[in-house]
Image (tube, rainbow, N blue to C red):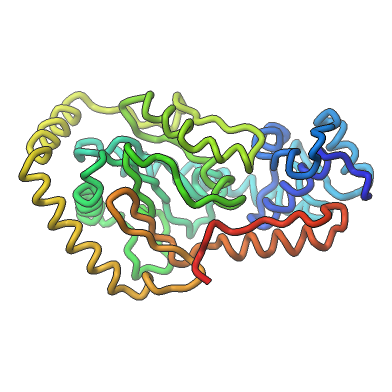
Length: 327
């Protein structure tokens, strides 16, 4: 077993990680989201991908069912994935409906679907995660306006709701001038590799996001952002005009004043909340990034992954670190 190729170890480690998410992978997904071979083989000597899979199947470390790969004795994950794929289709329709209501909100540059929905692994109880890219200097106003629209529609998840099926979770904002996400780990790399750009008007900014977050390739073999996905919500001409008019009105001194008010009020509320002091997660608030993951599953997933690879001596001293969560 210690003689496994670098490719085989990379595939096995990837399936161990996704086993923590109860998520089997297709061959195409394995080729794309596999942990890079360089983490396991400094000489980059790798077998053919298919040969590496066959190698793992031959020694009964992984199994396959109807084109989906998973750890041995975990075939039940196949049925779960098929069920959740059907759930995901309905949830995509719901998030697309909510995004259509946000198309007139000024300073929204990109809306990414993320989390279990982007992975197409939601349960019936899952909410709908969005990563929002705003115009620089207007991150606080944009958060207020998005929250207002979704609150009026009663589709915004609040911090008081432990479970909020089909509600929109606005847990991460960045700006068009701070696209590089600084929190980096196997968890975040795999998480953001699955991002789906669901609304945007400038393809160049989506491409710049990918360039600025090239660090993700340290954790996945291939990464592409599907710009022309069927999930994308197109802009409406009338709503674009409304959006531009609001952006003009809020783009000068009035906007600067309102941005300051929004910053003072929101940052004070966040700092006073219990979530800001929660250990094991992360809450970040500044003019370039707003991140609200006080109860992130990252540490649990990374710890479980490390325990699983440590139990298999073929990985040597290989371990992953979290992205800098609170102790």
